[in-house]
Amino acid sequence: MSGYSKPLPRLDDANAPFWKAAKAHELKLQKCADCSTLRFPATRHCASCGSAKSGWETVSGRGTIASWCRFHQVYFEGFAEDVPYTVIVVALEEGPRLFSNLIDPPEGEIEIGIPVVVYFDDVTPDVTLVKFKPAS
Amino acid sequence: MLNRSLSRKYAVAGIGNTRYGKLPDYDAYDLGVWALQEALDDAGLAVGDIDGLIVNRIADYQRFGEIIGLNPRYVTITPGQGRFSGHCIETAVAVLEAGLAETVALVYGNNGRSGGDRYGGASDLYGSGGAGMWFPYGMTSPGAFHALMAQRHMSLYGTTSDQMGLVAKTFRDHAALNPAAVMRETYTLEDYHRSRFIVEPLHLLDYCLINDGGVAMIITSAERARDMKAAPVHIAGFGMATELAGSTFPPDDFWYGAGAKVARDTYEMSGVSPPEMDGLMIYDNFTPTVLFCLEAFGYCPIGESGPWVEEGRLALGGTSPANTSGGHLSESYMQGWALNIEAVRQLRGQCDERQIESARHVQYMTLAPMVTSIIYGSEAV
Image (cartoon, rainbow over all chains, first blue to last red):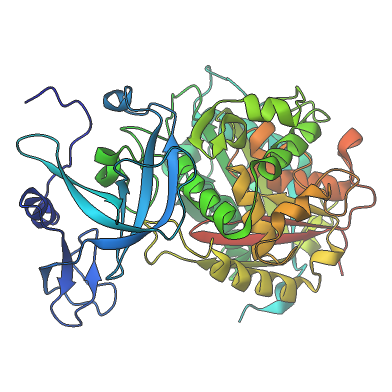
């Protein structure tokens, strides 16, 4: 390991497909096999129809910024060198949302609603985080 | 449809609280017992007069019953989330109405400060199923969740830091009049801006104060309460609604959907509405929640809470004096409980320097994935 000291995803049976896809630089969300509703974080049952049947579907990686904030407080030692760092809520084109980071955020205000595209950040040899950058 | 005939049928017969602050010699049970004893004394009751027990944040109801030597007919326990104070009070009314108990004690004990509770970082459990999923991005804490909501409100409606700062400063001014408040030193808006960012746009002074303390209430029928030591304060109206679906993420609507339902039910049952409210007790975990609450509960139009508070309305002497105790931001974060007993004290006229003149109705509000509100009235009809 390259001394990466930030928290890493905790893989479990439910979310492993998301992180495996990220490693392959693909953004996949869980999809209900009965009503086709996309969802994330992963759950056994679909919140729309209750079905326990699901698969994973690759989505566009396009979305907009629903909101953002900037951390000044160090809650994790691994982020001590990064503060202030930006956390965003991305509303994906397909509906579901993700908390993430914005790569190369502007200095000042970030406009809500601006389009972003997925950016796969290979933070360790084993782990890729799903981040976003402004769509050019 | 809520049963409107419940309006003023039940009343708060006793209230009690511990000191607030750093109380390392007390655990949550001790703080609960201390507060309960104060509430029983206030009502002129003994422990044995209680036949319903609702404990909140204290870890185990069984142990609490053992400690106070009580076998209540009805007992329940609720999680240590602040939104549960309003929930417990409404549950007490439902329990009384069902005949499961005649006199209910509600007991809250919180040793979060001495216990080293942290709301951000590895122990963060905020949100739906815990926040660990997002730690790799540095996302953690209820404060950040509310910072995201605040930023969105600022972008959509032009709400400013000055307006949030004014909420914080106003409640601090109130705390200066409350001997029980933990933070009583007043400050200016410049001081507010100089306080460090925790999660921008929120400053340190936008955050509530984690402390140790306990609060208890005794709720019974208005009829029974009339024979007790303290003047009854009536539960005139209440309501509850939730937005749990999709609640991992900040709601785009600032919980207005659930808030509007609760506002409607609470105003309908009580027969009073914002213009008639003499005081407000707003769940101020963070300053922006106060703004969202004012909008959700119809005190001002959606998006206009910023300019509305700038008119000085929330201050004592304003049109809608709010959190006269100093609230969570300056008295102590007692997760809604201390705001509810402040409402009772205002209606009893026990607030000395911070008393709202001839207060008859005070509204408590929590805006969260579970929204509750309670309107208290000093009069029986």
